Length: 308
Ligand code: NAI
Image (cartoon, rainbow, N blue to C red; front, top):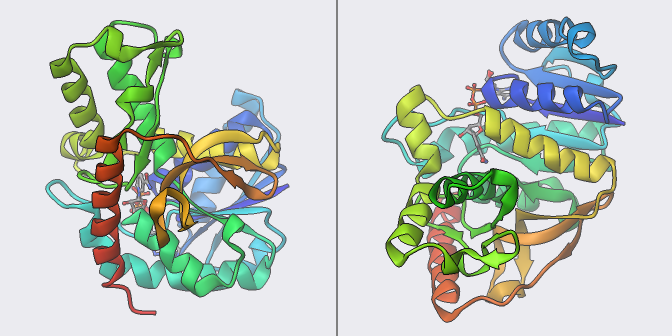
């Protein structure tokens, strides 16, 4: 099955690489607006195939969307990333125009496509795709929770001095520095709540470091991260292509779930061949409910800046 990745930059190329390395897709088409860039990235990645042992074909095109026809999944990473000190929300003006244009091109050539939105501010960009693509809501998935949960697990493992595979945890709500909600009450080490091992101070530290995980990296790298974002997207694409029916927190259009409607926010969902198979409603503590509502309010404000 064919996967299109729009934006052959840091995140797009990383995501294409992880998809190819896992060898579950027949073809990955990279699209970029910069002349020759996607073609170059595709060629470079193809020259790793014999070294890394994959058969996925990777091709690139400068904006010829006919090459993306028949894609099962398309990932939108096109747009500008943030620079140190910037919030994701500050990217809206430029990225909204790019995302809207790219979506129309994708749907024209692949009317049954499932779109994974990565460009920031992601919850608002996912909302924009819902409002402009004409696709059913199960086919539009924002990527944020998969990455933020991986960052949460990294920080949990660090605080617990445990291997990462021993810990589990999930981040829901908004993909923003203030709106992320790491669910400490549900996080576990080998099935035991982490609240039994970590002091309140340690829990707060883990939650705060998770929320600013992206900003910390942007400061260190001078631009936003790409390995973990690319890996997070590849897990979502794999869940769809291989019909894993895996629970992954994603930014989805809510229609009453978690007390919210007409907004895309991070919630746990079963991801499989149909895209979103089901939104899972988990119980939240009163404090978590309040934080979810506050995050929704902030995202709604950003959505208000969109022009359709
Ligand atoms: P980048 O600058 O390395 O790559 C973006 C690419 O998009 C560039 O190669 C550019 O030429 C291309 N592009 C721009 N306009 C285009 C168009 N109309 N059609 C096709 N290609 C176009 O940026 P990077 O680091 O890959 O980040 C991409 C986006 O993903 C940013 O908005 C960033 O904030 C976001 N991001 C989101 C994450 C998430 O968790 N949702 C995580 C990391 C990044």
